[in-house]
Length: 450
Image (cartoon, rainbow, N blue to C red; front, side):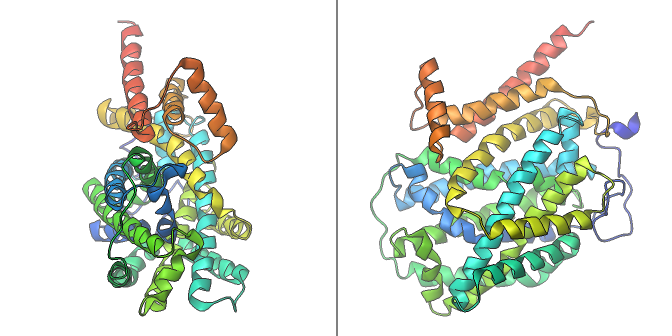
């Protein structure tokens, strides 16, 4: 049926300026390149990113990088990871569909539930991390007079409000928040870089794992890019907004985090103190703390869109309220020490999934033949490259979880594989998943009766 082809539904442009409440309603095309560029630039600046810069200086406990190597890793990883996010946004702009609904075309309706659930898990995890980090940042600025739990609840309520009016929130960010973030980043950069005359020591030995960390940091947004890009006025605006806005902001964020960590002896718990201690640091760091709510907003909204793939006619506002309450409760007990291991899991799941999507959609003509109906038949062969890419990630890369690392170490020994320092788990997983997708397509064509 024509309505089942991925580029035919939601072709009309409604007069509404806010996101539809259910998947039965068409998505308004109201976001231009500036809206999306500002939104993704704000997402690229993260308080978690400042602390996460430690993973660049010593990836997974490996030998420390030099300052130059860490910055180059930030640039290379951001460009690669953000290009993946930008390309993942294009199908959403072209079809008007959220990310997990698009995966019905790649895997089939029932099989798309698996990545939907995985995305909900990672976005709920991210959301809890973000509320925790907002609360910690607020205490760094205002002291301990207000309990951490109060800041978590306040951040949760702000997140809930932003998620109920998502497109209005994006326009609000562009008009009133982005300029403050830019000024704050420039001020803090000047103040901190002046205190660090030299950043010596280290080597390039852990460069590849560091790049993997940055790619994972970026690619965590792949399964939600289309949730916002579906409202883009063009696919070019969607890709450009993501690629330019996010990559520049993330590199700046990581570089500033590296400098701040150097001032406190790589003590993650004290890194925000370096910002607050700078001249007018409390004011400008406070701006970044307040802005962090756009991170939790994006997490909750993407969780909502993923759940709507399973329940397409449930009002997204109801789902958003429930998810906001859930992440607020989790933020009260979240273990931020699991942050780096969490990044590795995200990368291992979503880098190869993106590779399968990109090859099937852009190379093999998925745009013209994907069936995204609620009863779309399962495409089991597409699971194979995804799983093989996931395995490739762990065969090459390491993990901060001891039992998981031990299992994959045994797997390497069983096949006689020894990963080399120059190998990138992210690029290896992407290449394996992409090549196997091409191979399966070739075999399918050969086996089809003529």
